[in-house]
Image: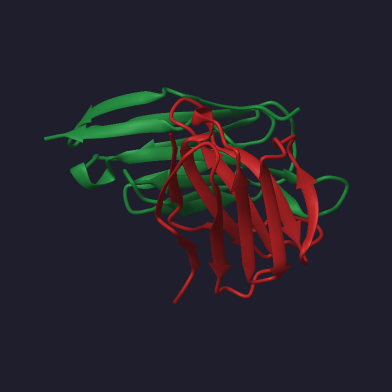
Length: 115
Length: 115
């Protein structure tokens, strides 16, 4: 595997289900990100992890719970979602360092549909 | 709060024509990125512009940065059908109180190139 991978690629869930999205990066980066891409909104940053520590949470509802067990893996745990949470969820990674933002490399995304 | 605005949001071009996509941002900070997204696919990094006056070219695409005007442009020369995609600009910034980076994206420009 190369680059950034995400599983599953498609997910349909009911509002009472609990599911998890997985992201893995094979680039040796030290920062990972979750973004939400909806049909009518710009890409929204949800969470940033650097060196496995969450450095930013952009006021995301608590029904989204991130987990970063190590620098290569990132999870997004989902529970009691709403239909408006249906979107493409993109994971990205970068080599974050003092003095600048390095290019973020994106995974293929998980297309989530909440019924 | 950093805002990034692109125009136009929709662009329909004939093959062989030239056009420019504009990206305005509200605060001066860090780098400017251009990404491409094909339908159903993830984001692919095209360019990163580091400083005022930076110009980068790859094939029929050329990106430039004017930090005084807070403006970046993506110029398309002699468009071909393969360039049909959604193009995003993104401005780098700081995540939380750290030096680690995050991106704020524009709305995206949907480019369609017709024969």
